[in-house]
Amino acid sequence: MAKELYIQNYCSIKNNKVSLNGNLIFEENSEDIKSFFKSVYQYLDPKYSKFFKMDALSKLAFLSAEILMKEEAKKNIAIILSNNASSLDTDRKHQDSINDKENYYPSPAVFVYTLPNIGIGEISIRHQLKSENGFFVFENYNTNFHYNYENILIQNNKSEAVLAGWVNIDGDSYEAFLYLVSQNGTIEHTEKNLKQLYNN
Amino acid sequence: MEDLKLELKNNIIELLNLEDVNVDEIKDDDSLFGDGLGLDSIDALELIVMLDKDYGIRLTDPKEGKKIFESIEIMAAYITEHRTK
Image (cartoon, rainbow over all chains, first blue to last red; front, side, top):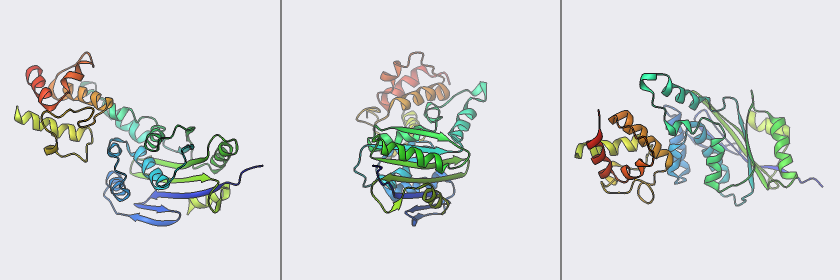
């Protein structure tokens, strides 16, 4: 018999605002992405100084996960994320550091973030997860793909819950919509509900 | 030498994004790795690039870094002796 799955919690970070389950929990008109993410970090206060070493995409994924995983005791939580720009924001920074052959000093700390799934690694280290994970690149948030993958993972006992969603950064533009799928909650895990919550 | 030590502390904080560390908190003989500042292997690579970029010192063997980056005191002494710019 199929398990009944729910969107246990969901959060979004965009336009200088942080929301949890549709409620605004933090807002600040910061000068730039870096300042805003730092303010959100200070608001959440995870006491995790490695945050400051992350690239912008990992910071966004980390902060979103921090909101949803704060009181989460489960350990077998899969992570399925997607976006449109992959790690392009950091790729550009790396490219800038190697453009000039006379001033060729690529930064190892930048280079290690030239893959989008590094953010998943940061979340896994933080929450000590050794679960299935994947990062996919789509034109737009693909509710059909996400719904099916999340459903299959839990129905087949590959994970107890799935932390999933859309985490995108490109230049000054950023957007995160993350949610936790599990057998707890009140919002049914359906493609329609994912679409509706994302568009809110 | 004291100026160089201060310069190194400031550079390390900025380069390695140690946003919760102040210059005053880094003592000259503090361990930079392990129990000290808690730097990691990627930080070590950043410091190797910094030696090359800022002081013209090119380490051919990354293992050399282990001794050189032991503390600010040791780093400053090595840079003073080997710098080409």
